[in-house]
Image (cartoon, rainbow, N blue to C red; front, side, top):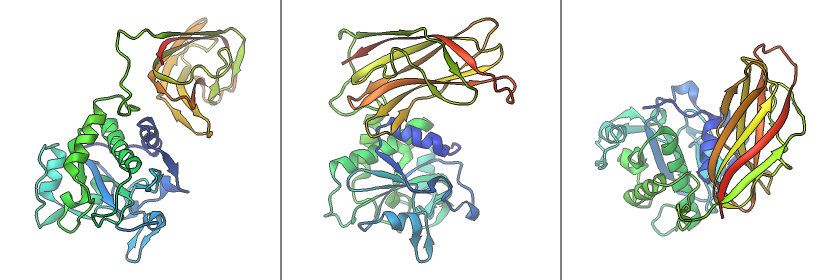
Length: 337
């Protein structure tokens, strides 16, 4: 049982897992919250659309079943479109024994009871995978892989196992979706969860015997940081690294931030198409005299991505608009090609 992820956190977790996410207009506030609560959440439900060209239906709904009909729609090409955030019309009522198995993360998911007492729309995330559901329509590898990543990302964020994932057909006798084997799907989710988020089969992380390259960059040009705005630092330019099977990076900052003020730092991957993956935020406190702050990140980065670091400053008094100066910026770390 957990509080639902915020829209920003959900988006970040999916992208960190390598999900190819796009955002439909207004998805963050597109929901059915006026009909009841969303949360606490207990798991994830996998659906197929039983049709093609189904994105607009998932957004807008059907006669008698208003949209959104899922949180994410997954196309044949593997594009995951964020459709809604909050309570959505995807699950309906679930059998209590099926729900208990998810809550307990049981390794066996029973045939659902005929009585359906649990509000599935309240307790589950839902994805609609575009497929006719007739047993003949294939799931392309890219689509299936993205579905596994989507489920694994949410499990990873909540600390859930693969047994928090069920098919709609496992929560109710009314449904037959999805038209693939859920035990295999859960096994594939479990395999992902044993690796770092951006792992792909065949790209094992380096071993201790592999000799790393050294990251060492330095900038001592004074840089002004205004309060409340993320600023990408120039550490021998902007791009710190591109293309690495794994990296460990630490940014070290010297600044005039006053005692008690807050510095927030985060690494991000800038992509050639203009999108980005953003890492978690680390906070440091200003101190008397000069403030020395360090920020860490580890992961892998594609050849089409560029590692960058950005900083935000928050004064003690929110109305204070005085800027601070970054006098030195250092990047240290290791990476493996």
